[in-house]
Length: 276
Image: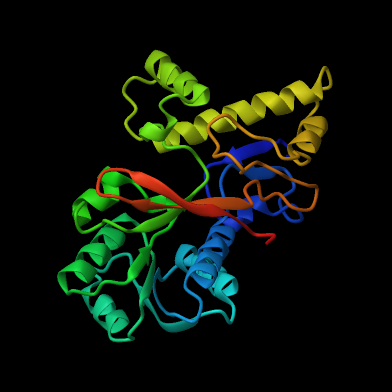
């Protein structure tokens, strides 16, 4: 019906398809783009290494896998890629197969339960690869705590937003503003990462409406939503911004990696871009 549907909370590429779904834009990094950036990080940080990959046997896992393969290219070797079903009780057998590949980097393209199990099983079997997990499962309490915080030390994940609980942002004005907003409106919300996503989406929506001026037609709103240039919402990491065009609705093109220190995430390295 040609109604703008802006900032859907998903990474599924179908929601960023300017050609086939021109009235819909998501608010996150696409699964394909994130997978590619994970692959690029592996290729740049550990060139020539052997990589083991666990992926969920559905569209989510397969899209992540395709992105990782694209990002790695010929810079590293995928020694083993094993799938699991979301209904599987454990991923113990998959971890055994991946461990036997001799890989020193393990990319777990999985949802929370399987991710927790994979981290814990790798540790318990004395397999010590560099572990990378996707941003959608990078919750300390929801994913790392069940695996064991001590067993999760060193796990890496990409991100594009500030962690409001990270002491590094204690004096950051945008983070202070967000904390004040949370206190005023959402005192019972516990998943601040999702709250930040909504907060930044609302900020971007407001910026689009301001650009529209008095012409608030559906067409003009969509025109401005599809022509954002390096727009930086308040809780987005420095060096990362939103850019859209009439032919490319992907809002996020850059991410930065972070490593778990046993209590919090520490940002590491530089921003990785899909254009580099």
